[in-house]
Image (cartoon, rainbow, N blue to C red; front, side, top):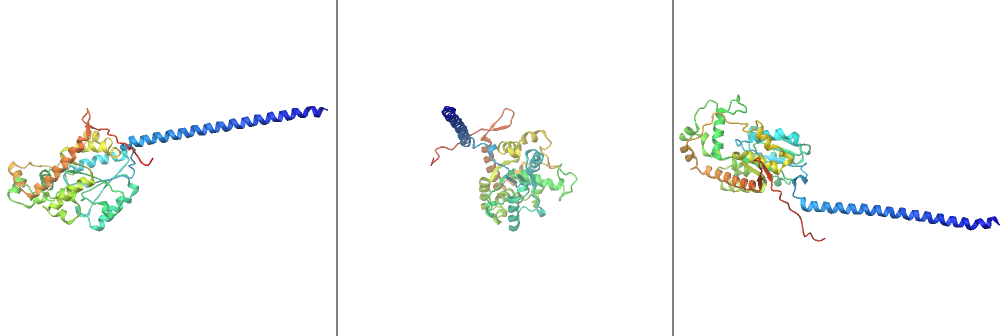
Length: 349
């Protein structure tokens, strides 16, 4: 009798317990689904934000990975290159890049075909040294010619051709303040540049100005033939097609400012350092005498000067155009115009 009375209660309790377990299980499943929904919504929101950032912020240089970046400064002699390289050496540790000097046997400016290939291969695959700035008195080398995927960024400085020749003329005789005790090749020769031109000596021959064109032209045989029209055209073409920025010696501080704005991973703090440190005019030619007007007029009659000056004016025009794409700040510096670009109307969706 007692068992018959308890049986319905047991069944009732069992049913209630089953219902409680089922409700608890159902609520747990609902909570998990809601949690998954929240995670999915968060993931979608993040994807949307990333897409917006990619569309609107892809022009920001700081988003670009510069860890593998290689910059080559194939510096033309007597253009202020020592002052600029000094800034790079001072900044390399704090900005996290390497600086390497390319020392070529006999101060030759052109490499053999074998050495060109080795140079390109070394620079491209020496990952331990990346990011890096290589510098040296070396004619332009086209990396694409040797089948390399990632090409370096070339930069350079160019100087008024007669100013560069006069500076080099006196440098060979009197040296500079960078290494004042080093005896130069023409040490003891006191002939002025004006007298040299009057006497038509070899050291002041206008053909000695034929250097900036070959440095931009490259390693073709025609590049090194003074007065070659193809070489001038090729130098201009390479300046536009392969150089990230070419500055002029007379506006070196602006060249550094432009690099700081354009390549901050390398040149952050460069302009302030250049202005406040002893890097400005680090290497001055000693006892340099400015040529007389009649000497200048005589040199400017030459075909070589006209061609070298044409390259200089061409580089100057490009450099001034690059400067116009930046805004001067109140403190005399430069700031990017903060242009933005985005991708729209992407198909298929």
